[in-house]
Length: 135
Image 1 (cartoon, helix red, strand yellow):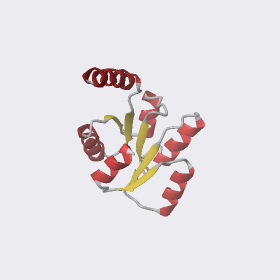
Image 2 (cartoon, one colour; image 1 turned 90 degrees about the horizontal axis):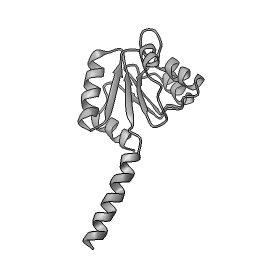
Image 3 (cartoon, one colour; image 1 turned 180 degrees about the vertical axis):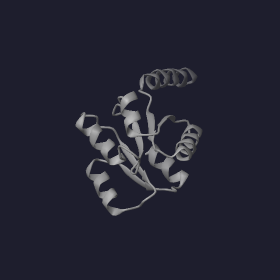
Image 4 (cartoon, rainbow, N blue to C red; image 1 turned 120 degrees about the vertical axis):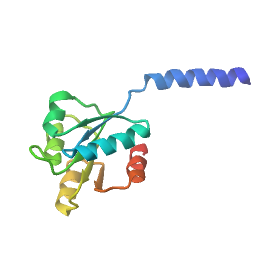
């Protein structure tokens, strides 16, 4: 019996080693939001890279479908919705979670049409964001 359990552990370990690491990219122009959300997600053992703008993100990253973006809607320059559209225009289908300080219905509708998988109003509950990411 001990041998069987050890063997299962070995197989499970080799399987999980081959799974791609999910990177969470946080795009928000507010430094305090970037710091706070990064700390929160790092404490939950997520890998996070933060960017101050959509343009900075696009210049430095080519995300995969295994990644996840947390994006502010209202930012100087490229908005979060414009970033979503740019990803789709480049055939990059990445789960996007929208966060915003302005809870307006038009942004929610636009984000959903562009494929957003979640929408959180700031300030949001830490547990609800972590719970959403776990699902």
